[in-house]
Image 1 (cartoon, helix red, strand yellow):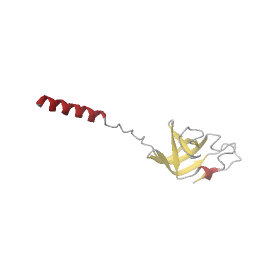
Image 2 (cartoon, one colour; image 1 turned 135 degrees about the vertical axis):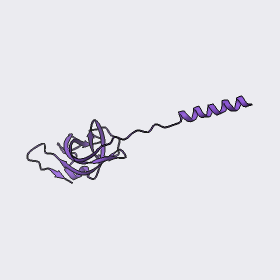
Image 3 (tube, helix red, strand yellow; image 1 turned 120 degrees about the vertical axis):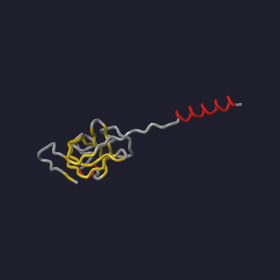
Length: 120
């Protein structure tokens, strides 16, 4: 009986160790000073999963949806040079929280001199 209890103890211990979830560490991105990043529609250009066209930024090869500004705040997303058709550059400050980029400043940079900058 003692061997059976010991065997059961180690069996439960082995199951408990394998059941541990590995947590994914969120990158420590906190831009207090403006940084230039790529920006576009997360679904159309960066391959993020979503239900509709939403603004996203790509930082160090990882894309994040943006909170603090909307895709339509910067012109027609479906225009020839809109976020759904073209990856643009933006100057941003903010940080990544829960897998989303919380923008405190977002300045879309000009591709064309005739096009104005838009800021939040």
